[in-house]
Length: 236
Image (cartoon, rainbow, N blue to C red; front, side, top):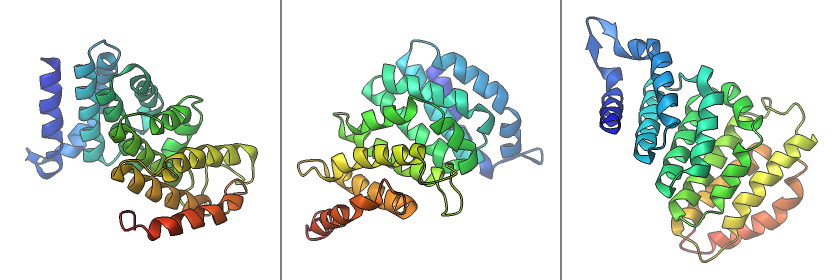
């Protein structure tokens, strides 16, 4: 029953921006209820039911889409729950968690997600682990999330979470992301969707961190590999 109610609420909230109730913008009303919604969601995410957790993640995606973010105050706790779903959940729940994580990263201001993403010692390794998963849907979505994280960490040349892109922390981050993406980019016998996501992901990394000392030495070999992909009709 809880799962059914959550799914209904999620479906309703996706159209909330176009409805009016007694002259009040329902998006504003939803924003006022976020605290209660999050408290209920956190309680359900702590439970044992995988179906309920998936429904909660669906609801939260609808809330984020409707408010175009709006969960800044809850991101630290929410990403901790996402981390749990990536470890303890089924493959389907893991995919749902990755989809929610990408929405969190893409629809919130970069400054609000940088800290929760990078101060956690577990989340980035979890994403790398998801890139090495066996299910192609999880792999492809993990690559999309990594690309979104790259854009959030350094949204512009003059705006970066790391004070110095030559710092050890920044180079460790770039190397970790590059190694994860390259492991799929270099493979030949993989799904087409994975290939596409790997190419897009490494392009995002180069465009945002191409001047990082950890990545610069890799560029000649990377460009040679991309040229070979251009010569392949499937990946062109």
